[in-house]
Length: 100
Image (cartoon, rainbow, N blue to C red; front, side, top):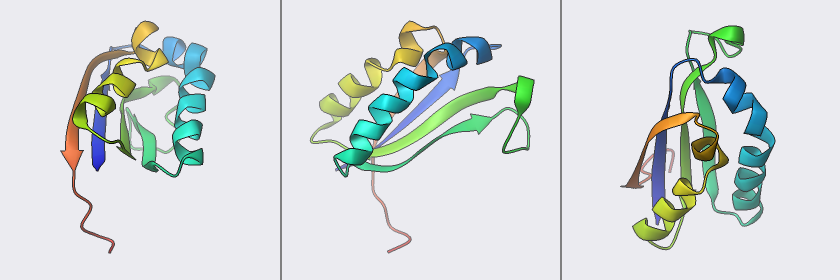
């Protein structure tokens, strides 16, 4: 089943985000390699694909896991949590309807 993982950043977390970005992306790349990643990306703090020093307000990941418990455990192990980037992470089942 697909799961939505929505994470909200602490204020002014850009430097922390950048410090562990490679570790965060490596985990996403592994999900992609396994064919389980539907989409992933950050939410810019301003209306721009490249927000610069404004940074990001959070992230969205939609990926396949066997159970909600498995999805939550994967999300809880994100390097951004240990680095103090995320202040809140929400994991919910997700049903893709479109595009078909």
